[in-house]
Image (cartoon, rainbow, N blue to C red; front, side, top):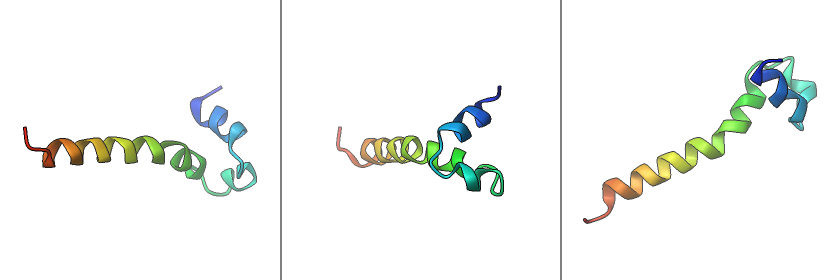
Length: 48
C-alpha cells in the first residue's frame, strides 16, 4: 500500500480523495510546509 493510499484512508474527505487526487496529501502536508516556512522566515529576519 502506498503512502497516498494510507493518507487517503485516514483523510476525513476520503470521498473526495478519489475525485481530486492529491487533495488529501495537500491537507496532510500543509501544516508541515507552514512550519518550515515560518521557521525559515524567523531565521532570516532574526538578528544574530
